[in-house]
Length: 287
Image 1: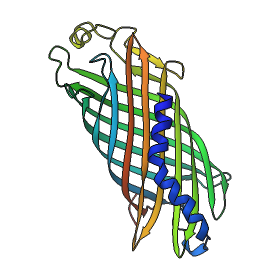
Image 2: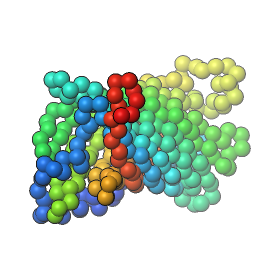
Image 3: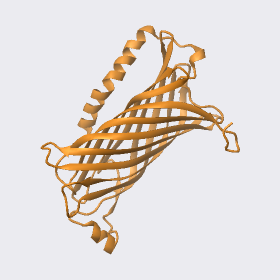
């Protein structure tokens, strides 16, 4: 899985990395353009709404030994708020995403529908900040629910996905200017380390779980030795008139091997969103 993640990252990050390299020839920073790529201050809330399409690869041996691939529709939102402005500043970042995809195997003989809702909540502290660069790091909580439905299986066609975990995360922001246009590149990396997940046992049917309840093996401890869990986003902020656009790619990998079963999922999503800044008073109302 790690090799596949690296290959996908190289493929889908190449265009944005090329833009970053080309822009170095005309780069300079102007203090008046600090709003592009700036983090929220005071009672501001930085909110971004995204729509995207993605390529998803899914394998779940509970349903089928085959790998299924296809396209997915993705909607997401990101909110960042300042938690503490005293001492080392800290921020709360919430990334919420939902997707639904139609997948088929290599022989085009089978089809699956995948659907997921994923929330990543990070508390990060600022370790470096100047006019061009900002670096933050901290911890995160990750929650995922969803499932896969195999259109050919008649006896046991569905598999549920439930996961909750905690880990480490970091974010870097690079602000630059090409000509007279300011840009900002954001790189976010999150790696859940410990969590709890759900999986049926090998040969166990869902009606057995419904009738007899969960067994000790249906809830498993997720850690780096039995699962690979990774999330990364590379985005670029672009001013467009009175609005600010944020576009880029998201990579999401989640796999585990438990109960003699293997579940494997890799997502590569191309996202386009609009960034807004809201300011709330202490009474919770928009000013």
